[in-house]
Amino acid sequence: MRNLLLTVVVLGVGGYFGAKLYVQYKAERDLDALLTEARPFVDIEYERVVATIHGELRAENVTIRLPQFDDPVVMDSVGVLTPGFLFLLGFDRQEVELPEFLGVQVAGLRAPADADFLRTLDELHEAQTATLELTPADRCAGTYGLTPAALQRLGYHEIVVDFNASFRNADGRFVMELGADVENMYAFDVELTLEGVTDPAAMARSARPLLVGARLDYFDRSLNSRIAKHCAAEQVAREDVIAAQLRQVQHIARQQGVELDAPLIEPYTDFLLGKQRFTLTAAPPKPVDLTRVSLYKPSDVPNLLNLVAESG
Image (cartoon, rainbow, N blue to C red; front, side):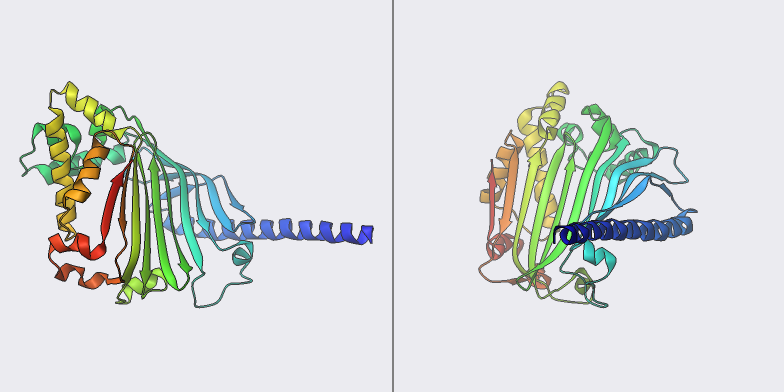
């Protein structure tokens, strides 16, 4: 009996590692074929492909080069998150329906702040703001976008980003999650819960998504304090900087058809003044048809969505 149990364990372990090697081999073969076709437009190299028992399939030590630029983008890893190892093998996958959970994850995406492909953003920013009358506060705070040159003035010499995105079905509802962490700068997490859609493709099939709830958590990793210090060195008053940042967030909100009222603005002001976290939640009393929100007055949307903000 003991020998039989040992045999079963050995066969099980051997079977798993054999299947793992098969998944990794097949993924590498398919990835190499795809990268060969893409090579005239982008050159991508990687060290190895790894599959895990939890259903993650990732490529490690990835380098991306665009033919028109000299500087590369490097990533520690980029991977796909699936329901489990059996999904990678294809044993529990249906032909048409998407899985209950699927995600992507990028770890350690990094580039120098003065990389040549980022410098083109400076040129684009100059063109976009050429007709605007930017105040000294707008310029030092980067309210119309932090260009690579502005990031270097704030002390950022390398941009390091972790990113993740996923969707899942939970109790008949479609949940989308998105997050990013920019090293020593900021981080955010977004969760959106919808009814009326079952997968991302439904959004393109003229589906009418109903918002059940949403949450945004935004964390300062030193960006706000660096902006405050830089603007003080430029002899721009702190209150002028805060006013410029509030004007910009109001401008962004109005572009989305929302007028931010005092209960939303005050916590965000506290966040700009030194709080480490800003949280915005939407919890409408009943699901809201997102395709009809534009029919409401912007000043009514916070109540429609039951928006609540806090800082901490």
